[in-house]
Picture (cartoon, rainbow, N blue to C red):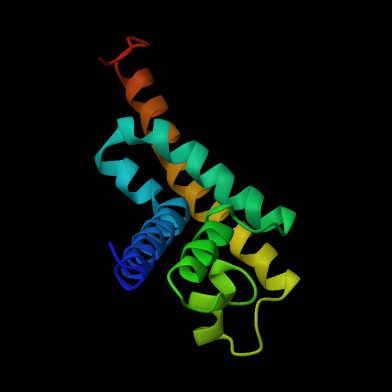
Length: 138
């Protein structure tokens, strides 16, 4: 294997990681909508949403971001400054960059959307439970 082809592999891995990271972020933000259809998915979604909100509230960088940057450097590409959201998402929508307030706003969005959907699901289950005379549904 030549150096050039190994660079392609690293760039490919960085791109795969980018798609996974974006999918993870979207799932964290609005994955509760999928839980409405597939309730057992909540066991995956709740920790993912909690992690996404924690990253935003803490002002941290997701560990996937440095890994992607590392793979890009191994592939002969320049790394980028800032975090994943700032580089790929926020820089397009908000050219001034990711501010701390915006980061907290994104965290609040994750909590609000998912809290609303899960709250509705819990209320629906409670109504069904009481309508059935307190007998749990399978």
